[in-house]
Length: 378
Image (cartoon, rainbow, N blue to C red; front, side, top):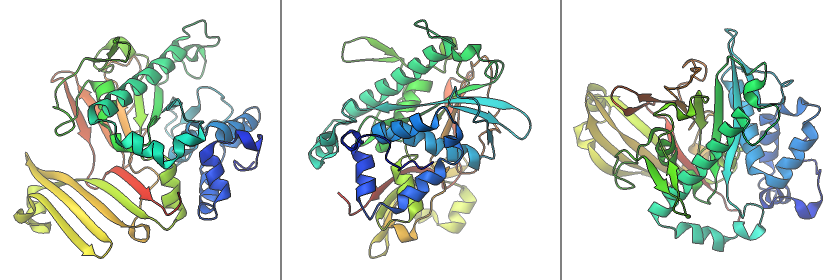
């Protein structure tokens, strides 16, 4: 079955889906997205509904097909005979994991006017504090919804915890933000607040602990849900701001410009040998016309850390499907997720140290922090 074989009335098609099928430039992404969905449409009872949902709502289904490909790249077997949660995964060791996918969305997601330049400019005008708080609230709300679904709250029939293939196995929520035109730029700042109660460092925050924020109704939204037993049913969270349509644009080889930031971490002796002490601080280098890099380097114990932000044509850029993916482990989970299940060089592993009450991020040198594509298509 084909994700792009029209299955709903044309006037109901999602604006982004319409843009893909009506633009010659975006045509190569169709094969990429269909490839991501391999196996997923084999669910006889669900295939037709999934295609309709993809064409009607787009983002939530896009995230699910991104994950479908990602789990295959992890070397996991997907049991498509299990219709819920979204993914029943089997490791070669015989261990099983269940993953439920969800996205945070904008209430105007289905409105064509939301995707016009005026709306994008309006999103850019939101203050950093408002943007971060709204992103945080959206993610927290969606995680609560899925936890309630697992528990069977509100008289939900056949709650996930009662399913035979779920019992005794880790339960993971995979979440991605689509609630703002600039959602990709939140990196991991909002999810760090939600799960581990950590504010971002300067200049976006103070780097301190945060227990809650207030929503628009002045009600408390509790943060740091993985720093206590309140979400013990959730073993871990998978998160990404790069598993979006831009990933398909990159893989399809569309001609565009890329802005990508990668984390850098070198041992001090490696740094001195490869880059030299003069690179400490901030530097800007023009490699050649249209290709430049902004670098930040600072000492951190026995390492020199920082980032490289590149701006260059897509012809000089490479990115794996797993690039930019984060795994967050819940130390208070009733069923722990083994750390080798979702292990790959480009994946960032995040933990919470109960003794020191600190967040620990294990990301390898070169890990993708953020990426934005700039095409000529409006």
